[in-house]
Length: 224
Image (cartoon, rainbow, N blue to C red):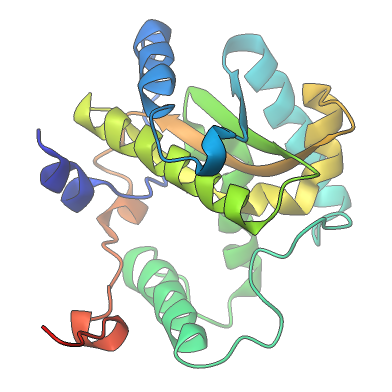
């Protein structure tokens, strides 16, 4: 599989089989991904992988937290910017329509079913492995960009190996609970999670192929 194929076939998988993932393969992927670009070679990413009993324990904790605090905890950063406007609002709405109504058959006004389905995020959609990415609090926007490039590299290398994934910024609404569970030092802030495993081909959520804007909408050519 070449890079173009990995990019074209990578999906945010939202339904996994319980098939185990070779941890040595994941270890190799995490090491290879460290060649991702990093300004000043700071390499600001901090990664924690959970599986087995620790993952079972976290899922149990999160099942309770989602009920106790459905709106999450005090957020250290906002997943979506305040005052978001077109075209970004329209893209987000279209994504929700395509996923909930198109793939899952959940109507827009059925907030109970939508909420219960969204809570599957915090069970990693049944994936057998979970990744958490954190960053030192002294880092700024450029280093967060570096983290994104590292995580993209991880996902493409996983796809090359036949393994699926789902990056999950939603974990940013439960940073306190997760940080305590992972015993993160106080200088590290949780950025996101990622589900890792093999896609369940029968899960309707995995039929989603998100739309992308045409090149003309986001690229300007000058002098060429």
